[in-house]
Length: 218
Image 1 (cartoon, rainbow, N blue to C red):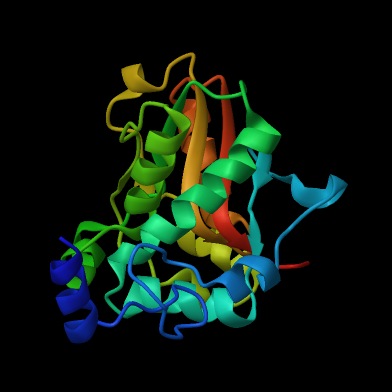
Image 2: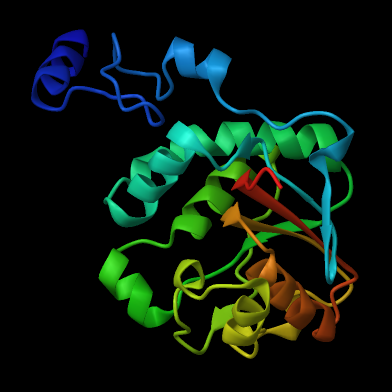
């Protein structure tokens, strides 16, 4: 096995999921320097509030190497980065939202975008985070309209208008009376998470919380 790992390292040198520098050995996904210096969120302000969401938490700020990493994850064909993000997000959830949710779900991609990208980045993070938390990971939402990418939409008002009506809850019995932890990769204005939470609430969810890998500092 050690020889095989060494062979793989020669063919595909392992790199840190954040700074993208070569790692000394296979097995880790974050280099020691990034483990120490990533822009971690902390303190009493770690919990965000947004419409229809009781609390949202993120372990990292969306800046510098974190931003570059998440862009590679979403658009650069790096689904393996979910293995680096999940432990960070699970630790943040354990510290701040323990006992407040019944199941884990995620903000889904549209069918068109899923075909183009090849994987649903929020689903991968949700499944791996739920496994660490020992929670059920359940599909609850469906994106029924391929809205314009939120990052290209503009102001918070335009983002809310762009995403309104884009999601539905196809199986309300899965969410009725449940406290749901909704996972996504990044939160900026919160428009997407809020719209998903609104639909889950209309379908009977008792409470919606949110967890993302990163958030804007403001």
